[in-house]
Amino acid sequence: MELQERFFRQEIKQIVTGRFPAGQGDGELKGFLSSTHPAREMLFILDGNSSYMLNDKVYDALPGTFFLIDHWEPHAFGYRKKDHGLLHLWLNLNEKEQFISGNILTVGSGGEFKSLCHRLRLSPEYQTMLSRRWNCLNEEKEITPEKTAEFLKVPLEAVLDEVFFQVFHADAALAERDKGDAVIESIKRHIRMSNGRDCSLDRLARLSGFSKYYLSHRFVRYEGRTIGSYIDQIRIQYTREAMKRGLRQKEIAYELGFSTPSNFWSWLQKHHDEVHAAVIP
Image (cartoon, rainbow, N blue to C red; front, side, top):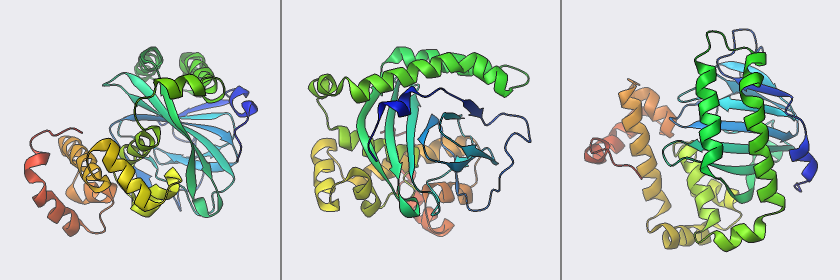
């Protein structure tokens, strides 16, 4: 699917937060896998019609809709087999390092997706403004669609405008500034936001557009470690944070993509010292 300016110039028609009152989302939960993670994330629907699950409620995912996924909020994991013909902008708020990173995914038949853009990174002022407004919204006693738009529509419009600029007008400048490997940074972001779950080498290769052998070599050359080692570090970080929140080992095993709790237990014993040594990638 070719990126077009009209996708980014459309009006933000709806902003959905997981703290909407019960009844705001009324679709069927059947068919959705669920995930949680410590970071805030946002999804903007550029093109195509589908459904999205956020905090155990299902909403229409139509062009112009922004989904705001808060810390540890359950949300849909990946895409369903019936999803197709979709163009989605994903944005991740890195509150520790104060920037917003992003990627644009196209979803084809069978829910298979691939990346169309690898260099989206917004400067700290966007993250600071958006986080402050989001925090203020969370302090409200009742969070309605109207209140959400009042707090966040303008900051989100500014974010979209910057994304539009980077995609269509700043490619050359970004390429000149970018001293790293944008493709590998995109793969790392995907691994982080999925907690390493369903991150087989075959799937990551499809997402990157490279062969799995070339991707493996490129990852090691840029990152200094294998993809498997990086996935382990992400799992270690998630396990630490999840244990602090009191999640059971069965729940953690599911989030990390282990086929059985016993497989997770074996992995945990292997990385016991790292999990308890606060290792952060």
